[in-house]
Image 1 (spheres, one colour):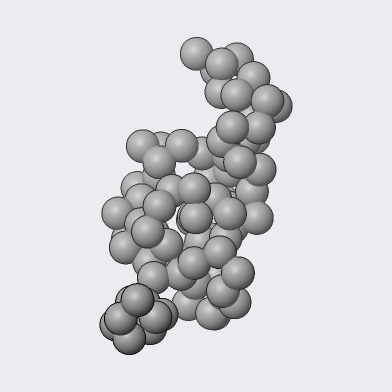
Image 2 (cartoon, one colour):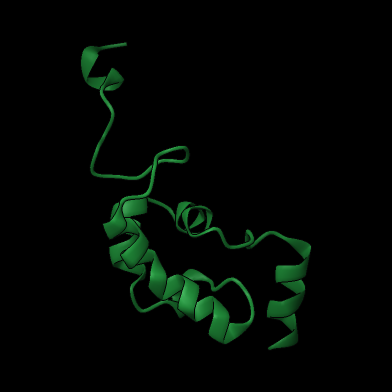
Length: 84
């Protein structure tokens, strides 16, 4: 593995990384949306999804970093299906 591959990409958050104050502020929109919806939001429901993905890389990482239940959680699936 080359040195370039060993270096950490500091522009993107990865599981296990500490959240900066800026990260917490960025994630607040997802947390607020989850409170409004009563469940973890999907990417298409969040107006800030592109900005969040630029920092956290994947929507899964956004949800993980925000501390919300995963979209694959049985309860979350049930809550999404109830709203349809």
